[in-house]
Length: 460
Image (cartoon, rainbow, N blue to C red; front, top):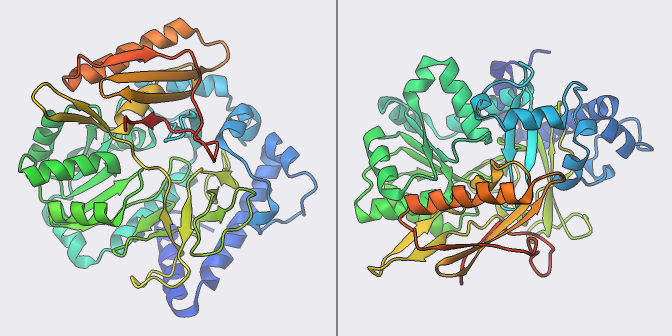
């Protein structure tokens, strides 16, 4: 069976069309077959999964039979986790520590992405071509669902896409952008990356000059851009805005739609599965459950009933065979919609209560405030070698306290010098030279009640 992007797109469109008339059976059938296939592959090729799944039935197409995994545990077994025995954490770490390798293929075959998200734990992930093809196919299906009129308006504006995110590191969106623009002159014309580390006045000027047809990127930054549009400093007219990465409230979506006078479709995804879901006009994220299993569960990993908020959610990515994510704890609290969504999308609808983007706000001498998006701060730590876990807390309006848990063998003073230099540069770029940076002796602290970590904690 061919799994080209065109075949995958047709299959996904057919599955959704069938589900509208027959219910979820066509989607669920694909999900079961793909889960059984990737579990069998993981058992055969990954020593870690071979041990973890010892004693399970020969065929597993029910995710609840599988043990739960998480980022910290899997990263601790990296060399046994991957299914290509040539891949080692040492080699991948050397690759991601070299900025010249951003957007290039590891072993001439795989994409590499790093992340900490809002948890502060660093992950290094290997993504195969199947992952990329599925992502491309589901992206085309999502754009097609916006309607012919929306797509035509984007085409008449040159289909220019502004990607708002972290740059200068092996982040999944920037690495993909770098690879795409290196390999295609057409993509170089229509794609432009805008760094969250850019001071807002410069950011606004660049966006005004680019005149994007669509803006896609970190929700916390898009909130700030909406304020700039309302103030009249940002003057763009996108056909589509897609906030991602942070929780979006109905008020957030309404404000962004009003500010830009356009369609807003938020995305709930992660580096482990960039094609996890797409948002609808009614504020629900619809899970692409033909290629992903998403299980809302309680603290004991038992299913949470529809309509109730979960303690966390477990992800199984059914495409990425080189580094399988199976019943992987994302740490987000979600609510599964108990009834059909009025938008007509048959895929399961969820709302997310995790990942609240904590924007830092600093006072200035003239009474105004300077805001810094949380991802602008946390991505500095993502690209610093030697950090296992980090947390930055704004303990006073003008003080940032940095807590770190270092990886084995890391030189504490050297890591701190790098962190302090990069953080000071970010603050200076935002005219925040008077902000104090403190090096904490204590490790990152957990949130009461759930044991979770927040990477960025603003002053309250």
